[in-house]
Length: 101
Image 1 (cartoon, rainbow, N blue to C red):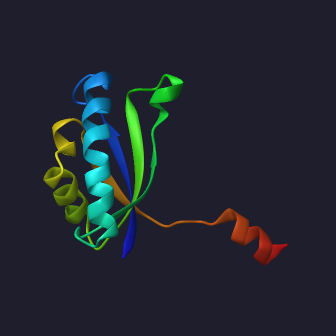
Image 2: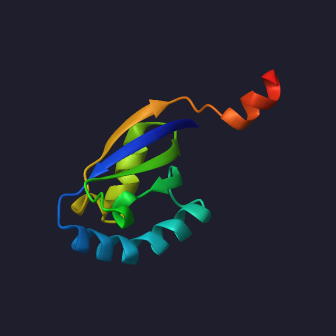
């Protein structure tokens, strides 16, 4: 599977998004853990607790970006946030330091 970074911007208020995502996230997590989704969200970085409510970022593993869109749509996330995904390479800086050090 390839890695993708997904950039999300809010479509609705931060309060509405937070409430909806707090309800939907456990369902999505269980489905991903059970292998019921075509892709998997590895990490999410949400800066809203630090005053930035305009963006959130996620790291996904997927065969294609359409799988991310389909998964988020199936769990209702795209009613609250946009999706802009891009395939990326991952650099493990700790591992690189060990290799060159």
